[in-house]
Length: 319
Ligand SMILES: Cc1cc2nc3c(=O)[nH]c(=O)nc-3n(C[C@H](O)[C@H](O)[C@H](O)COP(=O)(O)O)c2cc1C
Image (cartoon, rainbow, N blue to C red; front, side, top):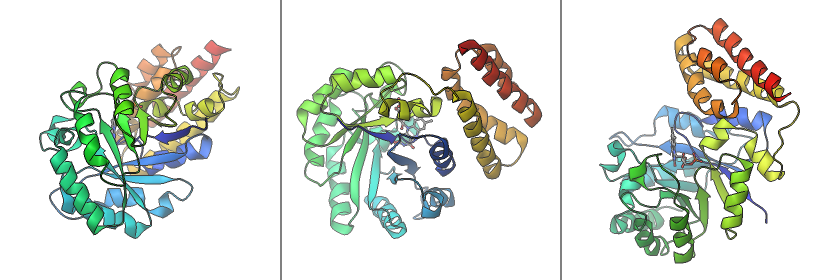
């Protein structure tokens, strides 16, 4: 079966700079969901989202914008904005688990309210030509919530439903609920995408064997931790290329330059890069001591030395 791989959005991580750096050095990712557009009381698209979605910043990538809202007017405003840029599809975030969001009836806090989902989708489909896709958890309180939302979604030409196989209350803790995902498959004819904890080729293979009807897979934290993962999945190999560290090093330096362009001051750039290293660390198991040192640096020169030490340590360990 041909598998399609999708970059699951991470606000603060997978902006256009990250997406372009990835695309310059790696293969295998078919589609990139952009992190959500969110409104702040005003009917305007913040400049940071505008920049992230402009076609000139994404010209080698297939990107799908995303919105997080529980308000039809905001949804329609975002839809018209992305249509004006040339996009055809807008993904609706019903997955965000944070109480600041869910307490306002947004993100995964909206899954248990099918009537409201219905009212919003009705207006969006009657007032715009946007193609709508969904990104959901299985519920906020329990995984049965999504099953009650399916009949509403089935009334509309929803392109697909990407499911992060947890409930909102879990945040990112605990395991994914694979039995719950099977129930989703058994309960709807909507096109479902799988999302959650795909961090290795072996894990992908396990999920692909368990859910043979699924051919779209969303990779979030696993993609940041290991940018080689999509091409290894596509090439059905568990082996990294021989020049893995050389490629990673160039990718890292490109990401670093991109952060330098975006942020002001050594501290801010290092802080941002260290947030990526929280994910990268999983694929440098032999350099724990060096990574600990890296997390303490304050200046670019020290950062650079510390990164080289991490890469050299990992190379020495695997050779
Ligand atoms: C820091 C962070 C930011 C996220 N931002 C978004 C977002 O903007 N939109 C979205 O749909 N999901 C967002 N997610 C959820 C991920 O896209 C993904 O669904 C989740 O991490 C589970 O997949 P994974 O195990 O492959 O990472 C975010 C997750 C994290 C950890």
